[in-house]
Image 1: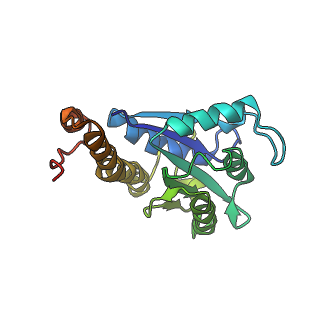
Image 2: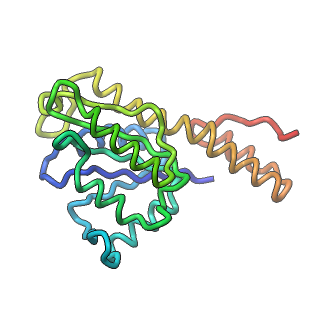
Length: 211
């Protein structure tokens, strides 16, 4: 069973720190040989609420609908998450294609307390549309001091935390989503072929045969 993720950053400023932080989580996912597509919102036209969805939004809906889960990253602006990430969520349809999907949240801020308020608000919105928000959110404080121009993280502890967000997502999927899909496949077909595929997949754990 294929695991695929979608990730996006809620900032369109060239060289933004949100994307630099998100890139570490994306790299960690890819190191585990798992597919992940990064949506660059600076290159996508998203319709304002109440208007027909643009083609870019429809493509994003298809990507997320087919994905196992998503990673959303946002800067903290004026005590909340960015309008870019809100517009992204507004374009995911109703019911939202995020419904039932595990979602990992990453926030960055220039201040000393990090993106705590932004992540609190974003968690509420994602939960409201039906997403399964993972508890291990990551808030990065003083982000402007933590990355160089090339995107390299200058603080090992921060890099570890961000990469840990990716591993938490993978752990959740392997322990919950894969197990549920495998059980459904067994009940539907009686086949045990999924056991081999799961055990051979990156990070896979061989499950017990259903009673």
